[in-house]
Length: 193
Image (cartoon, rainbow, N blue to C red):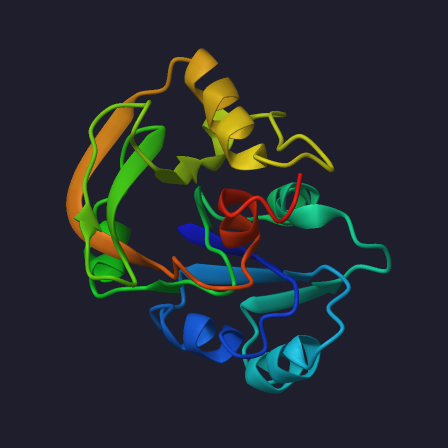
């Protein structure tokens, strides 16, 4: 398997089907969805979508663990040479196909766009976004459990391992932000600690 897409899911029934539809239809991609105790129809939508898709797996958690620990569950069973972390309210763009044909390095920085149309390509750790990591390089490193800002801590720890970096010119990912109700929106608007 070339790539595993890991998607933590929590109450994103409005977005999850668009997210899943955006993943390239290829036999060398596996998709692991981790339902983190959603209380909406996310699980039903996923079950219907993946019914005839043998490379798709749904993990249904019985206790809410948060996005970091949910991603860890996906990492633990992933079979892909590379891991791609995608949030269930975001989606992939056409550049994902180019990325799949050019996977190299330990970490891959990709271009992404926001809801307001802004596009971001960055070539350094402080401002870059790592979404794709070589599984073997990651080893036993995992996201910190039950931790806000788990992405930043995780990527900081990845950088301590001194990865071979690959900076792409592919616009791969649509970041569904700003989006009212998202954890990032709540945090930036001081609605959660």
